[in-house]
Image (cartoon, rainbow, N blue to C red; front, side, top):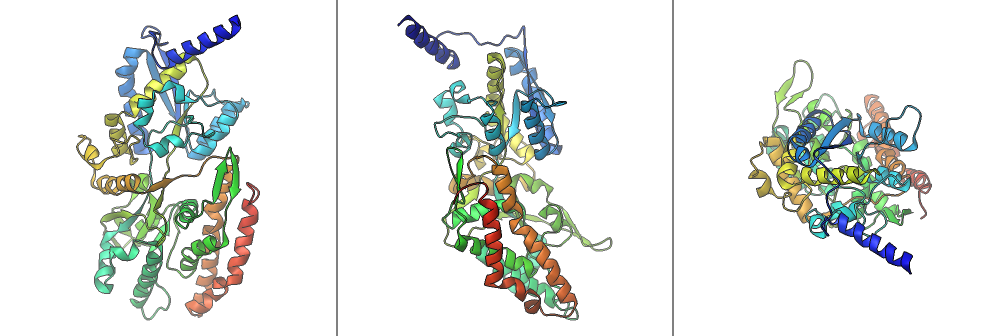
Length: 479
């Protein structure tokens, strides 16, 4: 009985401390500062914006409360993941585990399964939690009990980015309109019209039309496209994935990407589609709202042919008649196990960083979207006093509307989720690229486009691809 009373008393004291109630003192002291280390994959403008805010925090709130934040970019997303997993496993030569690291859900889930992630639910009041966009907070709720294993700091979605200068020429001659590319099916038809229009410009060279469109992040196309068509491909419960790779849905995805790609209406040549805009290989692409800052100001066909271009940003096309889903993406922050003072300090920094004024400032400088409900607002952003370039203003205007007015989706974490997603990333794109090369060779040999692509446009060819990808995905979950 005495032990039970003591246990109950202890729980009450812990809860009071975590809620900053019952008169308990903060574990921090300005006389004995706590240093916390943050690992990111930021680079360029994003890293500069992040480091500037850390410097501000250290000189103000951090100095007052006894918190010193240091940050380290680990390189790419993959580099960061590799270093985090090496650290938590204690591999030879690995760095010590940071107090906070940036992660997507699957990496965070892996670290959590190894006991490395802190549930922040008890470090935030209900009022503090409620200020964040609901779907962002749910991303780190791996067990479905309201836990917070990922703290959102900046997010993005996908938008359609257009070389408006060259589009306007095409539109003036053909009557094409933005409404024609408002859905995926219309985009395919318009891409065919653009190919035929450009092909007709050089009648002496048959079948040399240009592609209109390309995509970054093919896994997003498949996963979000499936949701729009009524199917959640990776359905996760308690960390177990059930696969719903329905054949009719896969066929629609195939017909609206693989077929136009093989025929030359879509293209992907550079590392990113913004690279293809720069070289004139395409004039439109779907990509992350956080990457629009890389959109070029000039198209350079070759050393002697170049011209300046204007950018336009439109909502990401979805399937006609489908559900209004758009992707939620962008890594969050995982707080790792440590002393009570280190965890407390980590949460204090993250709350400060995501206060509306700080989060808007970081967003407009880095290309990401704010994570609180009040900050993810066009008026709040425009009236924040932050300097916003024309590209960013166009992007945020569209992206904020998408987040606020459509269904935002991201897959739930499960074991080997990254590996399953990688299959989707290359399942369509690699096949389409390889087969397009064959079609190009046949065109050069004198075949018509229909003749050169006929082999790849049959039911049998799709069926073989579908079975191959289905069997690869079944490794990660049951059907």
